[in-house]
Image (cartoon, rainbow over all chains, first blue to last red; front, side):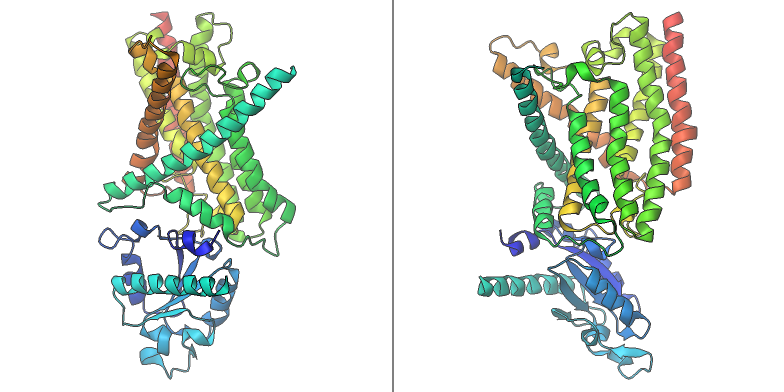
Length: 144
Length: 335
């Protein structure tokens, strides 16, 4: 059985704040509200990285959070998808040259999809997750 | 036990296991859709729990470095197996041959068996070596101790009433199902039974670890609690055991309080298969009604209790309520 067939209809996401201002968290959580209702697509937010398929990371990675982010990423079961939400995680944003930062998210863990915006709208976050799924499926088809 | 009964028991067990898993997952899907509709959302498709299980089965199954592997992997199997075992003791829809182990167990055994899936989760949580799971395991133990009192006093009320009427096996769920308890009492006892029904409706979410009694799994506070380290196949097995347990607990409430069959209300004499089919559909409808009021409606209406409040609610409020109900049933027999 191909994983992407079921994975696409049952994505469980874990939110990780690596030093964000909470703007991206508010928009990510808004995806679960009645207006956007990601449960329509079988997605839900879970409380443990062990249950998760998607790691939604928001914010630039601070020195304190870098080892924790690495650890949470390693705790996720394969296959794992990493989506970086917001400008800060993509490039460092307004804090790009801060002495407290290790750098953007992709300096610490491999990222599958970037969702730009400060903060991005909930539609954009859902779109990013769906696009990364399409890529995963294409990769699986190429391998088989 | 000769070969034929052994074969029948084995077939019955297999059939009930499949029924429990399918119906349980289906009811969980209905529960999620109804919950979504009550929150003005559209919600997932009803088959969503099946998709989730299929996904979890093919995901990686991580065993943490700190865990005790045999216990960590064994606990989900024990939880599922014990949940299916309880199904063998519960009469359903007046079907012939059910309960499969009719002569071997009663309500007291069901009460103890209901603890085993919870205890398996505790064992799994403690063996996973995570501090969150340890907190969750302690909370699960406390919750189990808490809901035992109201559950036990409800069952005592039934057994006392049947024993008073000189029924041969007062603790057997089959004799409870054969004589609907509401027909045995007067108005005072009726009030008592209503209190006992309310108690059981509120014990069910505790048994199933649903909001407001889901402090052991509290995903926003202790990151999934007992299940924090579980992934892949093991997590799927725990979800399946929860699905089967949903059927068990609702079927227990139906068996205790609403044992009527469709054929008791509308006589179907033309053919036995039609009658059995109508009975099964009516039984599923009863399960759905109980599930709606005791799980879906409650979990949407209220927030999560802290663990101290769980104990307060179960011991002080529901404990008192069920004992008052028991006393009313007893007083009813004197007047």
